[in-house]
Length: 71
Image (cartoon, rainbow, N blue to C red; front, side):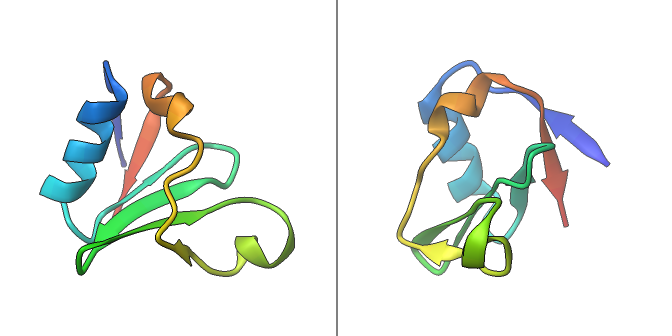
């Protein structure tokens, strides 16, 4: 599994666009992805831990933490 850290929010968002379909994840259950011109976000707790929510980009303040690159 590869890990990545970003210097800015813009670089994180750009990475998601440039790596369409790949998922970034932290160790707390949050996941981000971009596919088919939409951003998706998944968080821990409630229904959100079972599916991605479309058109959301939350927790971008975590751009500077170590994130896992999934699939």
